[in-house]
Length: 549
Image (cartoon, rainbow, N blue to C red; front, top):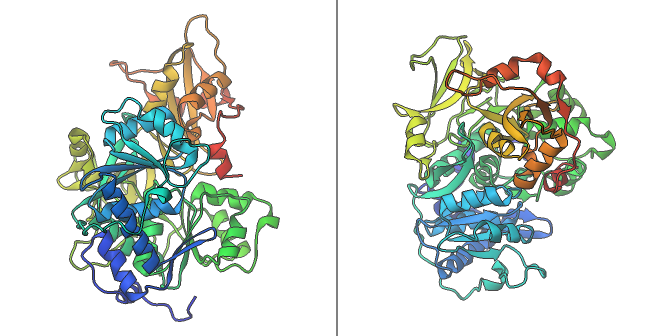
């Protein structure tokens, strides 16, 4: 890294102005640094100019496939360069990318693909059979193409076999106002919602991440988080592009090889979730590679021990703690230059454009009246990076806002220095290993077990931070399901991350007069946890386990 660091404003000023579309942001960087490495993956490398050319050719192929402005393209894959390429190619023609969790089971994928009404699907060889099953009953049937060739995928074409350099490059139909991404997020009702994001919001967030992490043009940003989350898409991909830096893409996070990858790729910065960082500090130090180039990381949540180990043993000096939601990317963070407050969500995180208002925060009571310093209340956010709404869900979109402010549903408090501190989530969402798991979805799935009368799922503190999934189950009369039965049932239908960690059987669930389960009473029952059985099953798939060996 250069000895003399540039300010975020100086970094962005290195490049020509753009119009807040993804295509114009990319072209701005191509114009300034065409021969610089932008994307690296294993033994593959694209300069900025080469990446732009690949995006154009991919956009031409999508046009030939029939994709047009406003259409949706599903992407169902582990991290792969084609996902990054498709983000910009889809945006170039004014269409919308719908990235899915590659661990989705058939039912989860079916819901998202059907809800988004995708015209086509690009998937990894590992996921094509699930993709085919998921869209079997869709009408019209979306086309399916692999993102790389696979001998076993008989009759399924691959992108590389269809894209030809001779195809006419389509005119750029992108605009800052155009929707470019659907990011699926869980809600209190359990049915996933597609948060719609426009190109301008992505670009503002990307340039804002240059501020949050003081990214430099010579940065080498390692991306190990999944490309169906805003963290990887908006911060890692977007922030790297905004800084004119280099993105080093990894297919997944692997604790056992993390430091070897950091050392070998000469990565200087990386984003992690707190659970992954906690795993790293518990690993054998023989896996650590001294002499690496990593100087900064974007991690939440942090604690004193994690900071100590990363600072003193791993030699990573700058750890930036933040707060975020799919709907409001880039609004709150501990300031890179300081001061920083360990354990806090941070302060308002600014973006760089003078043409748009800066984010605003306030804490309110149930009557939406602002509360004072130190008082608990619900966090409201107003920011130009806010989602455009939930697709095909006007009611929940309306419920998510009050007078132009997004309602996070999280209880927080503000201190005298305008730092915000998280208290609890109001919503029935379990934060597990960096993902939001809808409790209501698991309630339904477990309650559908033939030996189960009803079930309620709650989150309990996890050893590595965030929460573990705890299922409280009422069995049918004269039936005796085991904790392993419940785990296997969930494993057959949902992603591995949604398998409960603990199961307890009870005679009845506490309920309100209107028969709503009072989950807060389950969380407050200290004896319930003592009666729980820890799941010991091996899931039907090791997809999630492969990611953290």
